[in-house]
Length: 76
Figure 1: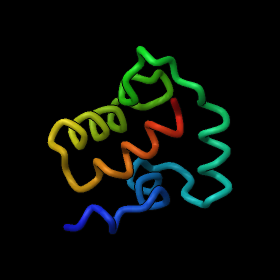
Figure 2: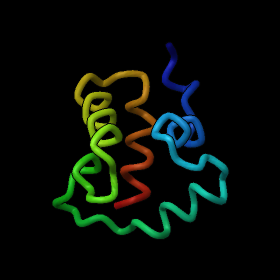
Figure 3: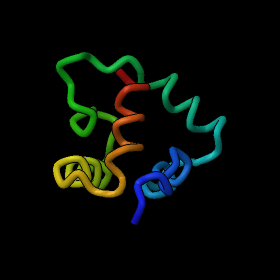
């Protein structure tokens, strides 16, 4: 699957979070900034399942990695 098919909205839906543009912006506003020493998947606000998904997708450089990197940048 092409990584460009995954959007921030589809990532939030995959994570079980509200996926409207306004909800995404609110989530980012409420959870940033992450410290430079905190890996995205280690942030305290994720559930175990969300954390596992984020970590595995980044480690495997899977289809979701591009949009996860984007979220990482926006939260840091």
